[in-house]
Image 1 (cartoon, rainbow, N blue to C red):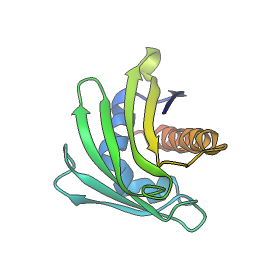
Image 2: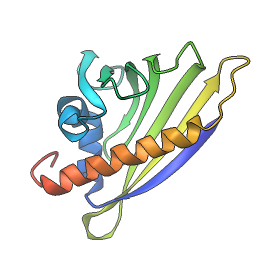
Image 3: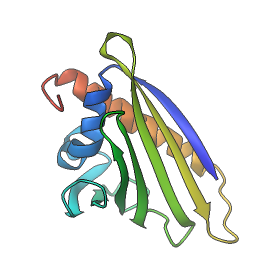
Image 4: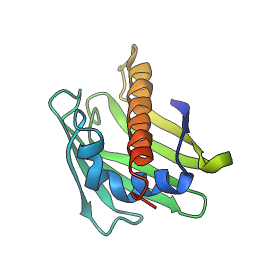
Amino acid sequence: MSFSIEIDCSVSALRMFNLALHGLHLIGHEILPDVIKSASTIHVDGGVGSIRHIIFTSGFPFPYMKERLDFLDAVNFELRQSLVEGISLGTKLESASWCFKFIPINNGKSVFKMTTTYKLLTGVQLSDEEEKVKEMITGIIKACDAYLLANPNVCV
């Protein structure tokens, strides 16, 4: 199963990509204090194969997640990650992965495109979880965009 989402951003693809790749685990708690309690890279150096551990606040539906960076294309502002632990892995999900792409458009703006692919465990059915995830991702991207717009020297 899969779904996609597109979100217009007010800042450049380069800045959004840099935040997604290098900055979110460092300043995510500042940008999203109601969502991210803390985050760190726990394996390797932030490149392909690295694992990022994100601990969510108590108001978030999941306590934490660990995601692995599987693919990185800094020229085209694209990355792919896989869920390796947390969220609903093992309880509802057999696997989940996502591809982020930040596409430059006119006037230094960009479009965020994300495709998420997931496999449910046998017998599991989702009701409105997919829509909730889309809303959550939209909120996170909009908050990141607003933060970068208000802080023009971050992630340049």
